[in-house]
Length: 125
Image (cartoon, rainbow, N blue to C red; front, side):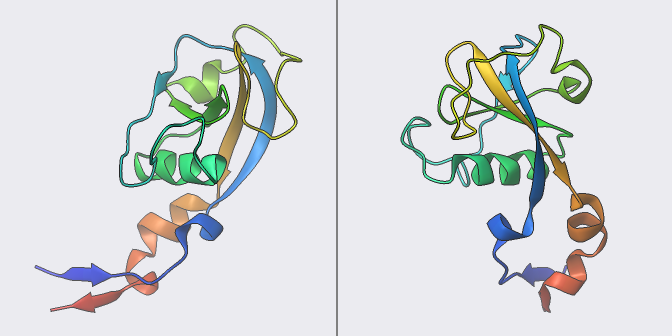
């Protein structure tokens, strides 16, 4: 068995782009990842970066921030995020609002993490 040790700043390594603000989509669920998504979502620092990391770890194609920091995902969310239309209710901080979610797509992750993992980390035997 090979164990890897990684000394990388994963938050700054993950890139994502905003798709904008959309009305809340009930096809989404709250993502649970206590290692990344710490504490009360309304008080969470770096909520967007942490949600991006948690979503990428679970291999979701899109994620959303709702009500100030709640991390939402769904198996087909990348196809259905605009199901209920655009919303004007999101705040300018990129963390959604009540009844509205700010939607993001992670980019450049597949090759960087999953295919080249060994190049980012050192093997410990």
